[in-house]
Image (cartoon, rainbow, N blue to C red; front, side, top):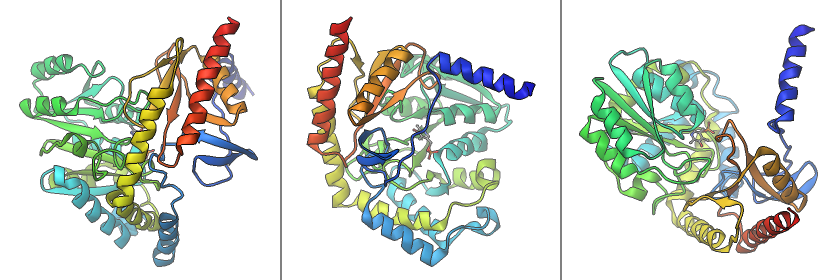
Length: 399
Ligand SMILES: *Cc1c(COP(=O)(O)O)cnc(C)c1O
C-alpha cells in the first residue's frame, strides 16, 4: 500500500538520523531502582523529584480512593464527573498555592498538557484584542496552547527581559499574556520570575507560570516557584502539575476566581474530556500532606544536597554541563549519534539516563538529561558521577 510505504520511508529517515524514539518497558514501581525489560537498573530519568510516586501512604490513599469513589469518574466535570474528591483537592490546592495570589481558586485537570492548552485558549481564544508573549524555551504544551489560541503570539528569546519589555511596550492589545516555564524542562535553569512579574505589572499583563518542575520541589513548604521567589500578585496565573514531584498525575491551575470561572465556562480542554478518576484526587490529598509537612521538607533538603554533590563531583572537559540548581541537570554532548552511544554505554553499566534529541532541543545540542530525586542515595549519585567522568575520559582518549 502506498500510504504505508510513505510512512515507512519517513520512519526510515528518522532511523538514519538517530532520531527514532523507543520505549522501554518498566515492570516495577517508579523509583531509583527499577526493573526494565527484565533487568535491574538505577534510573536518573524520571521527574519524580521527591520520590513520592511509590510512597506507601500515597499508594494506600489511591486504593482507599478507589474504594470510596470507584475506578472511573464516568463523565466530564460539567456533566456528572466532578466528585467530592476533586472538590476537596481543589480547595486544598487553592489554600496551599493561593497564598501567593488574590481571590484564588484552583481547578484540577487530567494532565498538565491539557491545563496549559486550557489556560491559553481559555484566556485568549479568537480575541483580536489579545496578544501572547511566549518564552523561546517554553514546553511543547505551551507552544501548542498558543497555536490553538489563534491570537498574535510573539516569542521572546530565552530569559531576555529587554526584548520582552520592548515587545510589551509596542503592543496595543487590551489583554497581554506573558507565558513561561518556571524551571526549563530540558535546561534546568529558572526563569527570572521576579523581573518578569514586575514587567507584567508595569504593562498590565497576565503572567502565566508553568511550574511543572517547581511545584513540590521548590519553596520552604513545597508551594513551588512563587514561594521560592516570594511572589504575590493578582496578575499571576499559576499552573502546577501533579505527576512529577507530587507523584500521582494531573495538574491544576490556580488563579483569581474570574480566571478559573472563565476556564470552566470556556476552555475546551477542560470541558470536553472525562474527569480524571476521583481516586487520583484522593491520593493527591495524601501527597499534599507529605509535601507540606516535615517529610516533604526533609526530602527537599536531601534533593538539594544531591544537586550540590552532582555539581561538585562532575569533572568534564569536553561535555558541557548546564548551570542548574534544580533537580534537572543536563550535560550537552552535541551530536545525536554520539549522545545515543554515550547513553547506551551508561545503560550497559546499569545506569538509565534520559537522552534528549531534537526537536525537543535545538539541533546540535543533544544532551543527557540527568534528573535527581530525593529517592536517590548519596552512593547512587556517586556511582553516576564516577561513570560519567570515566566515560568522558575513555571516549576522548580514544579520539
Ligand atoms: C511535564 C510538563 C508539562 C505537562 O504536564 P503533564 O501533566 O505531564 O501533561 C507541562 N509543562 C512542563 C514544563 C512540563 O515539564
